[in-house]
Amino acid sequence: MFDSLSDRLTQTLRGISGKARLTEENVADALRDVRMALLEADVALPVVREFIEKVKTAALGTVVGTQLNPGEAFVKIVHAQLVAVMGEANDGLNLATTPPAVVLMAGLQGAGKTTTVAKLARYLQERDKKKVAVVSADVYRPAAIDQLETLAGEVGASFIASSQDEAPLAIAERAIEEAKKQFADVLIIDTAGRLAIDEGMMNEIRTLQAGVRPIETLFVVDAMTGQDAANTARAFNDVLELTGVVLAKADGDARGGAALSVRHITGKPVKFLGMGEKSDALEPFHPDRLASRILGMGDVLSLIEEAERKVDKKKAQKLARKLSRGRKFDLEDFRDQLQQMASMGGVANMLEKMPGMNQLPQGAQAQLDDGRFKQMSVIIDSMTPHERRFPGVITGSRKQRIARGSGMAVPDVNRLLKQHKQVQKMMKKVTRKGGMQKMMRGMQGAHPPPPGARR
Image 1 (cartoon, rainbow, N blue to C red):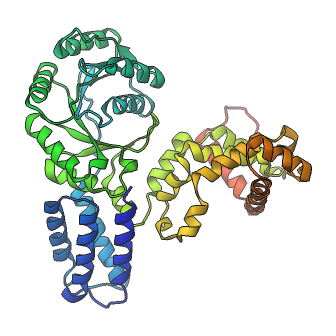
Image 2 (cartoon, rainbow, N blue to C red):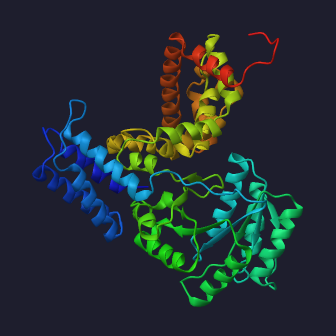
């Protein structure tokens, strides 16, 4: 997401460095490039105009102190305006009501609405510890109800049955009563979508909203439709009392125009980003963090939060203990690390959140392809337990067998063994410098041992 915009802005901001002061002359060229970058990213024209005017007003005549050079000062101004355009801070769900808190989902057909219902259910269960029920009021699309039932089973949410013979409002009212009996904290109602905005669809969902009075009405929009996403959100906002927007399929939107336009055009906050097909691929929308990512500064906070949720702390502590005792980092440990990276969305997702990674040469970025890491895991799986623990025994004949078993070639096996040795050396250096002891102390601090336990 934002790949092209990030590249253009990073180049532009580098070009203004070396000046003693930000003046109208040296800002003009930079603003022209920023304007083009935003338009190419499919940001709505009114948003671009206002953004450029505000950056220009803030930048002109800025006296650069000893701490910041002009390039850094300009970056700071652009960053602040990006945050302002996208909404200042994360606007979470308001669930402060007598249970069940009803969340109504609206959107066009094909926007990813039903999948987003399941993602949101999982998000609320895992992060907010809520008991979530879901129901489908989509009585038009074939298999819509069955799809939601399947997804609800996958994420562990309570599914309230409905049928195509019922009216959507009747389904919703019955589901609320059922959710009360189940002591559900949240009820998410999936509604029917259409291939285009039409009066009948709008009247139906307006009646549904008036009947159930949801505390949250979220509009789910396909981020890949770019500027059209913001315009569609505005059309829905004119009819419904929206409380927020979910940008689905944001991982497939290399331009990012929707994220920068929706808040300005609708006046409603973007609350979540759908960042993949998996049921855990839903992220809270943090304008400040996203602005940092756009400008190549990374998003370390989100990366840390993701690691805290998804890294297996027991395995990490076991590895730290093993290495602190002088034992080697073997191929089983290497495979565990590859799997941990995959659980965090893969190396591409992690690198996107690391500062300055967008400035890596294309050749270096190609080396960090998720496909390569998957191949490495397959190769390790083709080894015997003894080979994984003692890689030194893997000689010519064993390499040929492993290559055949994994569907790879012998050079692929050699490359894996070489990379493992490099990581092993790095781990050894960390152990010598006391890094593993610090890691273990940190983990013990997070999970104190029981009273009387030996340290």
